[in-house]
Length: 272
Length: 274
Image 1 (cartoon, rainbow over the protein chains, first blue to last red):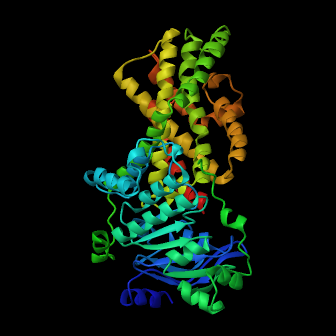
Image 2 (image 1 turned 180 degrees about the vertical axis):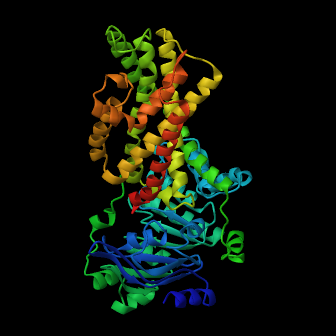
Image 3 (image 1 turned 120 degrees about the vertical axis):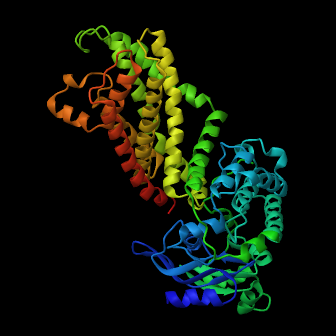
């Protein structure tokens, strides 16, 4: 099994994520149950599913924060369990929580990231300027991040996660808790960024419209497994001619998407 | 698209990690903490109050008690290094709270997905705690000098005091990080922090000599790293100060303990974000 996955990766199409029966158990509870999928270079791949379906656990394994219980995963061609350090050099991750340090300025947060990702000292200033400029944060660079709006913080975090030009960017609920303007600004910047660095994006979201609009392919996760994977169109066609991703979600998971649920994802309140 | 090209040109080539990269990672973590202190110097100021109160209130009263110190040594002279070690301990031991806070906020996740080895994160955090400890030393030296304590300002002695504080702060803050990894919540940590501080402080030679202790407590104090921290500080900080165990022993014990807690914390730290 292990060999076949490595061989497939070496010879097959340019997959930046490839898993084989990836599983994570916590005691007797199985959070991710034998998930196999792949993501191609440059693709935007969405993970949708109700709270507790296993999305965050899956992302934590792919980002090397959590070792798998069984199965295998290759990210950027390296084994997430055995070559975690190599994987980390090649991925960016924006967690669901607010990961920018609010006691540091925007500039200092970016400086920290250039050092953590070992960007040579001579290139740091230029990279930071470019990132600030791209994310529309140049004017507030010297302000403590605690004074940023939710949308500005998100953009700062995305900048922090992409200055080393990762092959894959993981976004966990990137727009939860943001107002529509903030959401749009974040997406505009993610699109522009993708144009620039060509990274694949793996994102989890509760917003079906976002998944439908942004993602090349979507996996619906339900009770630790992938209930369905495909382009938004393919998934909708499974349910009916006029179906939306909302309908797909309900059909596959039995969950109604309530207004409240969309905003309830454990994210800390942001100062607006 | 130049970035994409750069990556796909040789995506399977493993990165080599050098000793210099390791230093960069340690300094990145420590530097971030120092910048936070610069943004909020009030924190350091407020922490300086407690040791001053110990010296002025406790020190002046206990100085009236005969027989606490041997021979002609003034109690205040005896106490000053003890209070320095104590304030280093107090600042470091609640360090785990901020580690839990960083986990709750999500800041820790950023560190955990980064290429920085876990040991570099642990050592960087420990170094930043040392900076706090050193700022305490400055305040205590000033206060002690004003109170007439016979301080030794020989540069070599000062350097060893600095090293003792750096290692001691790092040791106790990393110990605190291990506790944080075990208890996981701030509420539980507050309770445990108090419980830990008392025995470490009182089962040491910080405010009274070991010779006054009952036998069983002497044994405990001999196993307590704070005892060696105080012993080293007492020898180096004071004019004519003498070490009971020898500076080399003091340093060896502190470094060995620091190495052990660093290894344990390196193994446990990643669990905080799992």
